[in-house]
Length: 596
Ligand code: ADP
Image 1 (cartoon, helix red, strand yellow):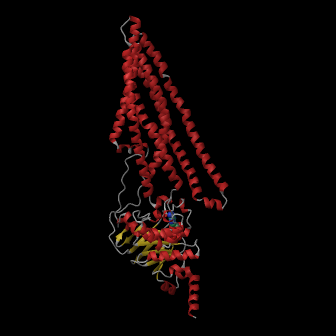
Image 2: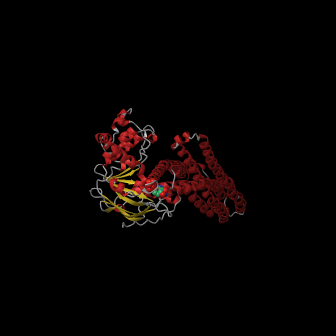
Image 3: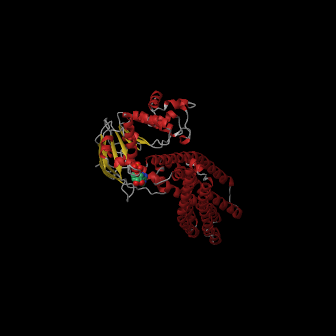
């Protein structure tokens, strides 16, 4: 059995803390930004000191005629403003670069995770939701990074610095400030705790709304075919309504609570004026020092007001961070093995394989067989008997729950995933083409392939002719979701793709029912040619495909119930004959007629 890779325990929280870890990749840039920010805060804290000292000097001058030159203060003040401007001038671009880089890293991690998520994850999530997380949630983080990250640091340090300086002037005024500031912040934190789940709900509703949009775009033909436009618009309206209502409630919740918190802090200045005024009258405190405290309080009053705003952005972004990290941290259920697959003929072996998608239902049970290299295996059985599930085990779209699958003697779970998927090509029932040129679509698995190789594969896939008829031949850009090509044409592009990969093992879904018989013949010929010399599994629905297979695996209820050649299975008269009964008879009649 392959050894399971242990899960790496997560130490980083699934909220903004987890997002800030991305910043830690650039410690020097962060240090530089913090240093510059500290310099600005220091200057901001010095300015009221200068003003207070100037007022004290002026008072001494007006009362006792002391020598005072206001120009000195003006010059120091002016110089500090100049330095502050210079520092801010350097800080802005450095901070932007850091933030942009970090956001780019988050986007890359998210995209990387989306690409690596197992089929099982995608089975349970919908595209619109994933799109919403990769776009809107990332945008909210961007908002947080630009509007909040350094601002919150600034507010935090400034508040501590200010309180410390007020205490230097007068412990009483310091205590008054703390006495109003602490309940204010505590109240904001309390309200903020209620805010984050509200934002999470808003974002989830946004995801649901985007899902409706995405499904409508992807399924526009079905909507029109059933003339369901009005219902779909109605569905969207309901989702939009729920999203807007919840968002308005959330915004209003916050808007109604911030003034309550600010009301408490609003008492600081009158209290300081009252108590501080008495201290000035009694001679304990100089008037200039009282002025300093007033200037400080006005400055932090502004910052306390901002706490309300940034907490809103913070909680909003925190909910988004959670949604993004849920994807980035989703455990990799299908982990790559370490072995590279050595050259080999492409033998496949199933050993007592069992598999279930969920807890309750078994989709494969005790499946064992040996597939010889280069032979064609038709997998037949009623719908839901486990044909697709069986072949999905080979490229590890899902991992077996029991037993093992071997390719050329090696457990697929031990092989490097990239390696495994290069030697196993799958042609799905539905071919997805990217918005790129025909040539690029064919070379999707081997972008380095030259044009001659691409054209050769297209010829082998019976696709060359129709590609040349396109306006720009191989350089024609395919419309989104391949709308400009027919189903049969798309399937031939998929066959050309597989030819170019030159796989050892091939998995084909022989569902060509939607094409005309001429196209069907072309596709079958192309698939047949592609399968020469490769171990091939064909999920077959038609007797015409099945009868030529080297071996037929007959499935029923997740088990292989019969196995053999067409002649053997026909002679046996078992489930195979039940499945293909009418077609077998038709075929026998044709044979008899042709012998006459
Ligand atoms: P076939 O290809 O023969 O039609 P499948 O392999 O698709 O059969 O399905 C086998 C069983 O597994 C069926 O009962 C089907 O409902 C179930 N099944 C298939 N795919 C999934 C999935 N992604 N999630 C849950 N159950 C699934």
